Length: 151
Length: 151
DNA sequence: TTATACAGTACCAATTTAGTCCTATATTGA
DNA sequence: TCAATATAGGACTAAATTGGTACTGTATAA
Image (cartoon, rainbow over all chains, first blue to last red; front, top):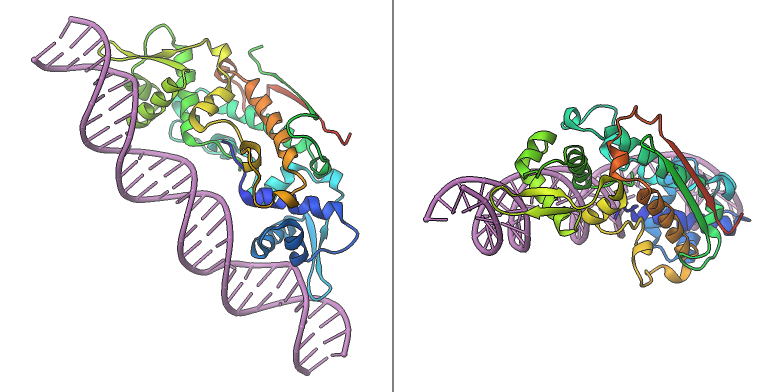
């Protein structure tokens, strides 16, 4: 699995729509109608994105949301970070203090390295990349190389 | 977050211990004592790893577990796959059928690409890599490059 | 036949997530 | 100043997931 929450997915869809049509301010209602995500959920997500600084929010009539940065500068990692906090695939990779098993655990440092590798991927992909229409699983090239100490 | 389950973490710890001491068969009790993971939990994890073919299990007295492959051939992706099923960071990247929002969704294909990139990372890291003692977050080099269609 | 050890499954408590709703605050324009 | 429009900040509940444990069954060795 290793799954993102639905809210994170919604956030990406909403931001992608905003990026595509960034000539005007977007109300939560407009975003809801354009993306087919229920209004209360759109509201919830936009509030979080606003608090995280990914979008500007303007209150009152004629208000709405707009992107705080250009799509090329908004990374997938920052979207995930806004909704779920920093990427941490295990407790080890998030916590500063040791867990119960720490004294017997041989691998704590290594989860940190794996985590770092995943964060690197997510920081290298931007909202602009996500907006490109493409055939599933096909046309983009991804290259990953790992040089652990053992090699 | 983007977190793995604790059981997946336990599995990696258990397999790393087995790899380090693979001269003999390991009983669940021995594994529990060596790793400080409670016995019932060790049992649960080992059963899953056995069913997935990552370890051989031998029943009866003098029985126990042993690795089914050398540590260099057991990838982190395969461990995650055994415990949690295939990596799928969103519903999009797992399901074959469209979700409710599909018709309005601009990015479905792209989650597949992001997912693929993460799977590549996880397939490139083996149990042998995880066994190397290292200073947290420092000594390993990770290189990731992404070439989406937009660049 | 008995002791040992894994296999399979069921179960429950705790946590997390998804979704909704209510009240407060800010802004515009008549 | 007032009414309409929008976001802000919570609280709350139902559903799903996860973690941990227990029980019963099966295989093997001595």
